[in-house]
Every structure is written in C-alpha cells, then in structure tokens.
Length: 316
Image (cartoon, rainbow, N blue to C red; front, side, top):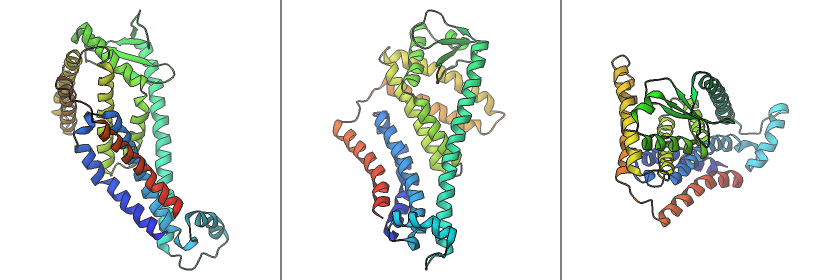
C-alpha cells in the first residue's frame, strides 16, 4: 500500500496546484465550456479522493496487506487491540486526518446546500411579496422588482423564478431584454446552481486553499458562457453582447463607488470587468469550438483522472 499512498499523494499535489493553475490560465475552455466544466469536476473529485486515499492507504499499512483487509480489521483492532506491530503515531495520525478531512468536506457540503436552499426560499418569498409578475409570458414566471440597479437573476427550485429589476428594463431595449431572459432561463434549464453550490462548498471548506477559490471563479465564468451560448439560440450575438456590456458597465460603476469605502472591492471590480470583457469579446469575435479529436482527448483525460485514484485504492 505504500506505492499507492505515494502515488496518490503525488497525484493530489498535481491536482492541488499546477494542473488547476494551468487550466485556469488556458484559453481553450471558453471555446468548449461544457467540456472544461467536466474537467474541473474531475479535478475536484480526483483531488479529494487522492488526498483522502493517500492518508488512508498509508495509515493502514500495518493493518493488512491490502486496503480491504486493513479496513476490515481496523475497527476490531482499534476496539479490542492490540494494534499490529509497526503501528506508530504517524499511522494513527494519517487515519485520523483522513477521517476528519472526509467528514469536514461532507458536512460542509451538507451545511452549504442547506443554507443555500434556506436562503433561496426566503428570497423567493420576498420576491413574491415585493415584486410584480410579468403577465402573458410562457415558461417560468418572471417578476419585476422595484430597483434602479440593473439586476437579472434566477431562483432555482421547485418553483423557479426569473427576477428582473426596473432599472434593467429601463436600460435595455426589448431584444436585449429577451436575450437576458433567455440567458437566465438557460441557467435554470441546465441546473447550473448545483455545480455552483458544489464549488462554493469546496471553497468554503478550504478557505486557505487558493486553488479552491480559483476553481470557483473559473466555474462561475464557464456557466455564464454556457448560458450565453444557450441565449444565442434565441437572439443574435451582437444583441446579447450589447446587453452584457451595458449591465456589466452599470455593475462595475456601482463597485467603483463602493471601492472608495472598501479596499477589497477593487478585486471584485477587476474580476467583474475581466469576466464581462471576456464574454463580450467572445460574442463579438467568436471562435470555433475545439476540434473533435481534442474534445475526445480532454474527455478521456477527465475519465482517467477519475479512474486512477479508484484503481489505486482498489488494487492496493
């Protein structure tokens, strides 16, 4: 099991720093955002399995010749003793760390999902109370809130709602408004909130881990790009690009005002401007998606990333 532990540790290190950094800096994800999202998920899952698996396989070395044998003997030996010869504090520490890390990740995911769903229900109740439904609209209900800020978002769940502000309706012309509505409905249709909550949980569970933040930012941009692509099926690229630019400009102006009071707003301002600029440029100067051979290669790489830690664990 020592070989499996060392290999899993090496894989965890690769997936914790160089691989996500290279992916976040790459240009190709904007050309094939769906495949890029699959790769990000494979990196996150494989990285977590590798971290925990490395600790487990190392800690179980004195308990048996294989992972399954060690796991089968571990409860009885811990409860009744004696511990196998060669068991040291470092093995107990590795097993304890694996258990704590796994519990921390799972509990944080449960807390994040529960909190997010509670906030959505509360927000939906406020929207229904303080907004005006837009009549004669097919599909998910659209509500208009009385706010001068140009705002558009969706609330997923059993009763999905698309929310627009008076400021947004006044800012955009009818074709641009339809493009924004199609964009928000694409988020609902493709269930982007599930993916966003998962990466939000990863970030909140490892706040000291810069790659978790980088991954969340990259995934957030990719789901926006996917929604842009869906919106383009209902409108032309120039109309959607104009709507994104207008709304993005108004939002960054608000952040600029707040930046005089909050230093950290400068980072949000730069990130927002960069994302808006990238989305607009992608629509105005479209590039073809990756060739089929490259897309297949990336999918194979994602599958390999998921398979390697599982194979190492089962074979150890």
